[in-house]
Every structure is written in structure tokens, then in C-alpha cells.
Length: 111
Image 1: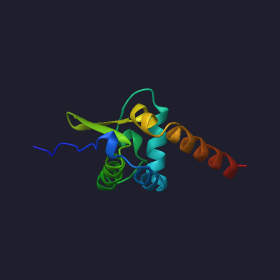
Image 2: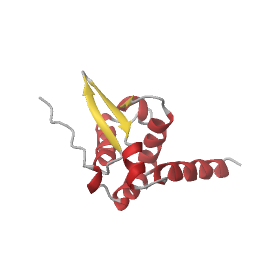
Image 3: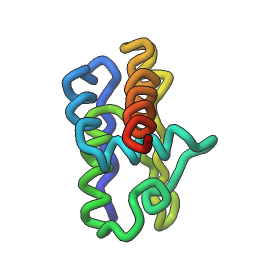
Image 4: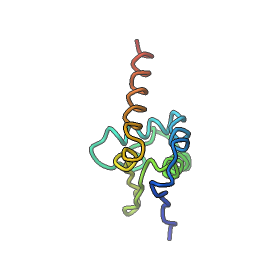
């Protein structure tokens, strides 16, 4: 039997933890992909292509520990959802502002 996922209560989620988790470009891209979807995503769909499963697991664990995602096992897949509403209540506008800044940075790079 696999260990259950640990999700921190929103009261213990910190700004520093969120910023640390999103400082890594891979994790920021994972959050962008999950946030852009209309429903929860499995790990392999949200992670960059050809990334080792162990590396994927590491990045998703950091995102979970930071309080950014909620993960649930469904058979052999792990489904992830962004905790937007909870984070938005604690840190209003934080995630949309970070994602917007990342989009603007990417747009500036491509011009």
C-alpha cells in the first residue's frame, strides 16, 4: 500500500514556501499547465515531456508541501489540482500575479 499524500492545512501555508516552490522553472511550468486546464491533471500530463518519473515525483512533492496543489491517487494515476481558491483566500491575487508575470517574461523573451 502506498503512503497517503500529505497536504498542509492552508493555515500553515507560507508566502515563502510558495515563492520557493515557484522559483524553480520546472515547477512554475507545472503550475502554469495545471492552472491553464479546466480540470485536474495527471502528473505525466502536467510535467515536462521525457522527465523521469522520480524527478516528476520530487517536483510534485515540493508543490504539495508548499500547499500549491492537492494530489489524489486514482488507480495508477495521480491527479493534481491547483488549490487556487484556498490560496486566493489567504494571499489574494498571488497566483494570478505570478502567472501573469511569467507570461509577460516569456512574451518579452520571444520578441
